[in-house]
Image 1 (tube, rainbow, N blue to C red):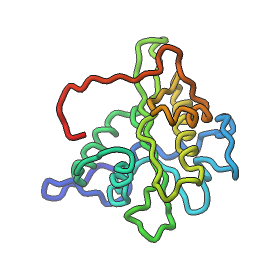
Image 2 (spheres, rainbow, N blue to C red; image 1 turned 180 degrees about the vertical axis):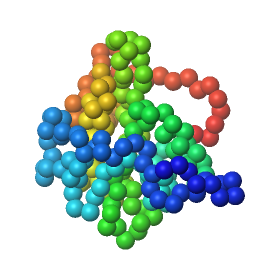
Image 3 (cartoon, helix red, strand yellow; image 1 turned 45 degrees about the vertical axis):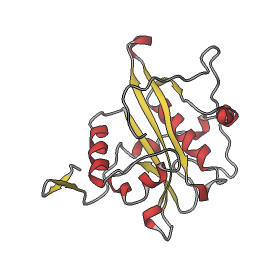
Amino acid sequence: MAPVYENGVVREVEDEYLYDPAILERLDFAKSGVKFNPPISAAEPGAGLRIRPLSTRDYDRGFIKLLSQLTEVGDVSREQFLKRFHEMKQCPNTYFITVVEDTETANPEDSVIGAATLVVEQKFIHQCAVRGRLEDVVVNDTYRGKQLGKLIVTTITMLAREMNCYKISLDCKDKMIPYYESLGFTLEPGNSNYMTMRILKCSL
């Protein structure tokens, strides 16, 4: 639904998703090559859990707080969150921020317990193909050891397959390389270093 404005401020009256939740229901985890014990998937992540697209109401469910376990986020207001959400949604088939929600928690303000992002890049190469990037993978510290990291990463890779990405890539610390290799990722010879150039000064 479209954003609701009150005195010039965006207010949301119900969940609006960043992308169509039905896409997640179509993912065939049997094709992922990743084993789960016990078996789980995006459609059936386990008792009391739900995997779905980012929602406009996730600001109040702890999404920003969860990201702070990954990196410095800064002071993000509800209005900033909603503005960025709608900017992303206006780029269809590009941003697939996916979250894990604990639907039975006694603390609804911390119910978003995991998240990861697929960014789909439009290319001219490979006959105007699309490429995926896996970013911002995080699981709440208190929920680790429940296969949720593996589940959210596999969900993103299956989303990339669903979007017909010719490949999906990520940047990770050296200590995480064995983990991502266990999920099917490989290091590219001669291209294993990630380099950046800071252009603007910021607090992040």
